[in-house]
Image 1 (cartoon, rainbow, N blue to C red):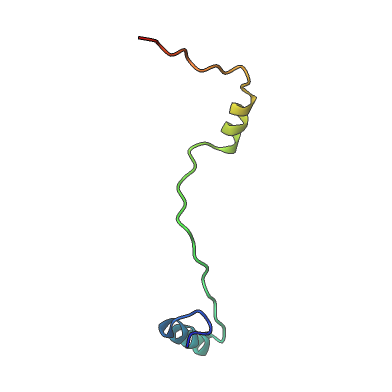
Image 2 (cartoon, rainbow, N blue to C red; image 1 turned 180 degrees about the vertical axis):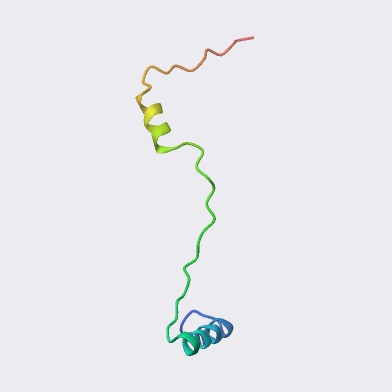
Length: 60
């Protein structure tokens, strides 16, 4: 039965770590994040551009 949410292997590693160091540090999951394309300064600058009009579309 799983009570802690950790597998047997994970618990074994944590117990070993505790025996060696006297403490357990569980590393939090770090999600991969894509690099931002626009900075917050770019977004503020675009928000100030109220006179933006898209280019006209050509009709056939």
